[in-house]
Image (cartoon, rainbow, N blue to C red):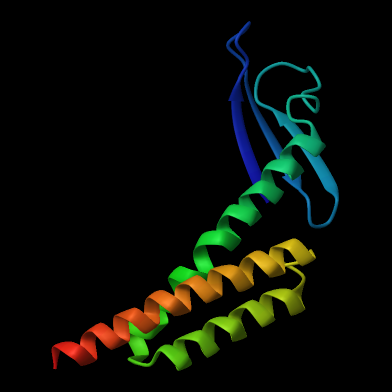
Amino acid sequence: MLRYVMKEYRSPQFFILENNFLSGKKKTAMLNGNKDCSSIFDRAVVERCIVEMKFILALLLPGMIVVFFTRVVYNHYLGLLLTVALIAASVYRGYTDTMPLIIIDAFSLTVGFYFANKLVHRKTQKK
C-alpha cells in the first residue's frame, strides 16, 4: 500500500491518499475539510513512476546481490545461482512481469557476475 502525504498550497489542509494498486481498490481520506482529493495523484502517473522504479532497481539490485552473495558464500558461482533463484521466484510471483525487466535483470546479473569473478580472482592472487 502506497501512502502519500501532500500539503495543498492554497490552504493549510493536509491530505492522505492511499492507493492499493495490487487489488485495484482506491481509498481516499482527508484530515481537514470535505473536498474530494482523488485527483491529487493520477493513477497513471503513479503507475508510471512505479514502472520506472522497477527498471532502475532491476538495473542495480541483481548485480549488487550477486556480489553480496559472493562475499558471503566465498563462491561466485553459488552467489549467481542464489541470485537467479531469487529472480526466478520474483518472476513466478509476478513481480517481474515484462520481458524488458527480465532482460535488464539478466544484464545486471552478467555485470554483477563479472565483478564477483574479478573479486574472487583478486583474492586468490593476493594469497
